[in-house]
Length: 469
Image (cartoon, rainbow, N blue to C red; front, side, top):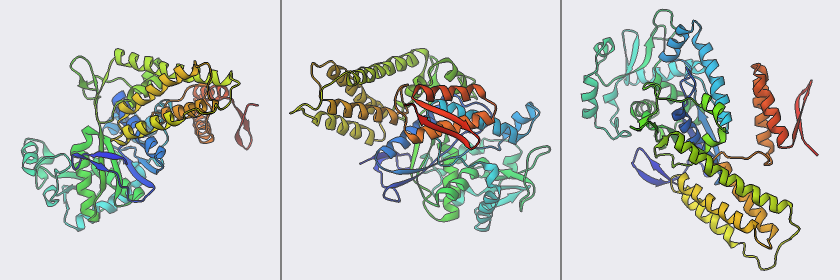
């Protein structure tokens, strides 16, 4: 029985999806104007791990993560580099896909982009205007925050507390709004900026409206899980709730999940681009084994902060090597043993490990406790592999369970057999790399597959693969 800490209610709740065996999950993705840093990567890895565990527990997960591909930062970067906003977005979406693939992040079911949903966004805003939840001011459109009675519930703030902060803001925008708390749904076009026509004139969407539109369009008016970094709780997710529920009259998301920060330095500051204290995933996966970074990010409970340092990365590397050694020892014994099933062997120990692992992970996806059970199974594998006599069936089952649990954390070791689906994903990534003329990555994927016994054949009809006999 999975329990999830719901930010909205500030307590753990038994997970009950809208459909019995299906989960509708939306996670806020990156604003694609630069490479993602390790803090951004933590969110991607955390929710990928959660998705994998939900699948392990038998759910089919519709996993949608958006790309914000039009934004002030993207426009500014495009001007600095003397190119267009779409070109910047395309460049860093490609970089994001490569960097997250290196971290063994499963592709989302769908990655919607803002620029592909402008008509949907305009239609959504028009409903809010028609209902009196939005108004036009100087060709901008704003949301009437006070009209939504539950505003502040997600971030646990009263409307009066929020008003104090909002009233201290200055600038032209504050002068034209009906209330300091109101936020932009549509921004009037500025000179030499990308813009679209709308009932309110040329302009582009505000940030908050984008996720409301894409989540409800692709997953429905009510979804099971909405996730993102804890810094998105207010105002982004608060505003998403206000917009979505004002339009539909229905609960937007039943469970709100927020991952903790990656901190850095002696002061343990949040890693962020605004503070300039960040390290990109792009540079890290070229310096260290990407599996080490994945392991580092995946094995702390998602709501807890992670301290980034050379020491903590080294600890992750050491622990990962211990798991790799345990697997290699067990596989070596299996490959060099002639024993069969031993009469009277107690297989219950594996069921006990399974029960404990599920119990820990069911408790709000507690990866730290879950990986502790994996360490204990590794210790058992080492000991049992050195036994004078082994039960082949038991050791084989234990190895498979060990690999299955590591896969939940996104970990695989060279030499493991790939599933057909994983092979197809790597081949698709290789095709994209060849199209982008990234031949180094294309060759790297070919070599990885060859090491795993997969032979690729590039034909006129496309790329085929077979297992090396």
